[in-house]
Image (cartoon, rainbow, N blue to C red; front, top):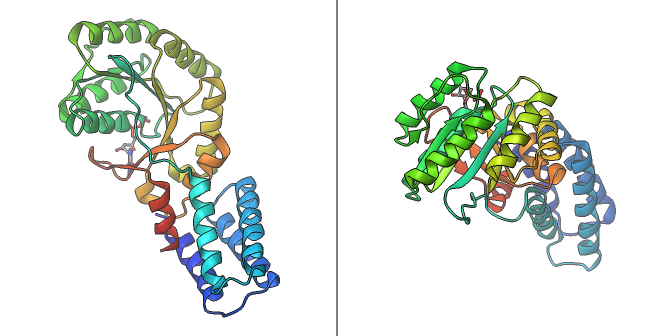
Length: 296
Ligand code: GDP
């Protein structure tokens, strides 16, 4: 994760810290390199612009007040701006609502939505001792429903029995009812994915949202798709309203552009990241730690 960017930034910033005094021109030149490094990491142009401008302004100010170690000051400013760009709070799933709390999982097909649903269920039932019910609303793909049932067994949580012929909204209602009657704490609804953002997909997810009143709407997006993941998140947020993002395949993403742009572009936090195919490959997203890793 972030290897390429991390190497580039360390190179640029150590060039600054090695020098005793810095001029405004030094800072401007360094920011030009930072800008190039971020663009090569596939960070969105608007995010790169506002980031480098914020750092430049603050850094020039720091240089002007003749800080004892101007280079260190610049590194600290870059670090703080990275954290601001990534969001300040740690990514946790909010279950603070009357049970059963509904979590709606949305995203494109192949993003890792079903796997992520099982990973989160495992975490909530294991670590947080919640009773979790899983339900697949993917009425067009029976295989996807089966897959969720199999994953549910694997992570030792219950899944809603599959009844053929029901619509997504009917299944969602049945899941909420089963959860109420069965005393479940959490219901996770795995909505149907499509290969592209289409109207039917959005309308169905919006309808499910309206009848289940979810406390969290999590968009699952594939980090490897870079800026497409960010565009997808924005589209889902505009149409359905999301509360957070889970970025999958971070294990294969050495550039990090989606992770770095997501918060600034969508305004929504990355709550968790998927780091592998196994059901335990899920990590919380801590902006400060990520910034440290990038600059480390
Ligand atoms: P869905 O169509 O969005 O429900 O996608 P799936 O959950 O079926 O996942 C598609 C593929 O991506 C599967 O082979 C998963 O094992 C894999 N996958 C999901 N999350 C991750 C991840 O974080 N890292 C890696 N390497 N693979 C993942």
